[in-house]
Length: 135
Image (cartoon, rainbow, N blue to C red; front, side, top):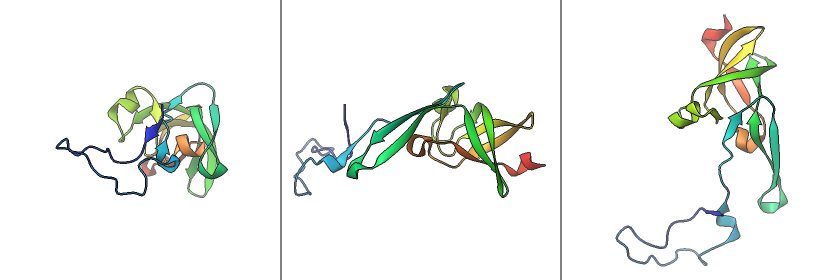
């Protein structure tokens, strides 16, 4: 089922709202379901054709994160999702979104990092190591 990104034709009072656009439905206003990238042992990606013939890579399952430590970047396995400010249930069901606080393993030690990319849109999990974990 398609997701529709436009206002409802009905007002809050129940009355009919007349169209403010030149037409009521356009393909441009169509959306898609959220990806909800899950934590897994192996990675899984999906390639989708989007508007304009462009291609979007959606990350369905994630196992690793590219963690930036200052000026260098290290690929580290993700252990767990500690917190997700987007939705409390996301942390409980191991769903990764931008802004999620994840625990990664750097040189055998657990460290905290914040996700800076949008895995469902970019196809990769990029994170920034927290200051307290650097020392």
